[in-house]
Amino acid sequence: MQPTLVILAAGMASRYGSMKQVEAFGPSGETIMDYSIYDAIRAGFGKVVFIIREEFAEAFKEKFEPKLKGKIATDYVYQSLESFVGNRVIPAERKKPWGTGHAVLCCKGKVNEPFAVINADDFYGKDAFEKAYQFLTQDVNEKTYCIVGYELAKTLSENGSVSRGVCKVDAAGNLVEINERTKIYRNDGGKICYEDESSINELPDGSIVSMNYICFHPNVINLCEDLFNKFLDRNIRDPKAEFFIPFVTNHFIQSGLGVVKVVPTSAQWFGVTYKEDAPGVKASIHGLVEKGEYPEALWV
Image 1: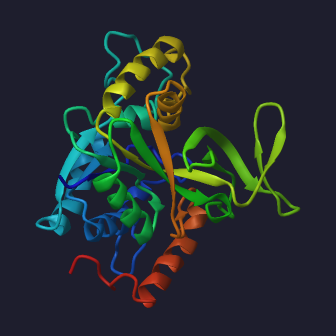
Image 2: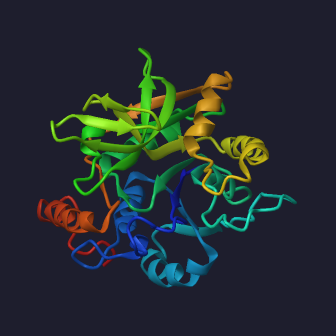
Image 3: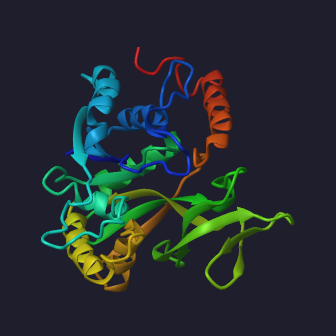
């Protein structure tokens, strides 16, 4: 069975200020997602599932269905505040969806095969999709997941701080834990730092980070449901609490349910966190096209 690519595209793009998921970055109007889907198709993926807000569905389908028809199967999952909340009362001040772990849970009933999860607004590179496909067709099982790992120094923005899942990896190449760091930047002295509530801490340039490119057996969806219910019991009154994928992978490891391999990629990552990042991303994509790594128009 061919693996599925699940694309997280339900975020509100609050820092970016517009719907960056459908902004044109390529020379023929391609979005960043177009390049991910193109790389997934040539790696061997059989289906792409878009996780979106329902109010975006019409715009999404108009943009992607015509060019993907006949090239890869497509499906849609709608992430809403009410999904899988049950009879709990959601506070009025809660506006954003519940996070990436909740997005994966919303795939219940739609995704029943091994799958990879990626962000809509990150450019991951051809090698990452090849590594993911190999893992999902040869190595994944109920007790073995993986993340595609990137070097931290290659994932920063020059225009502000970023959030990253910093990985601790053992000698066997297995993930020990992911620590979500929500304010990472390079300081005036050239050191990479992150801030938490009490201090400023340094991180090595070569730290391996998860860019939310994670490969799962479909049994993870039931695990997400169990953990999301416990999360809501603790956090439903907190309007900013989010149920991140790293919470799920950390539990999977620390509860002895299995291992998460860390598969390093040689691919260069880049993405759009802030509007000011967009020109650099466009220039990088045009450079890859000029080198012949991608055609001038992906879907001709």
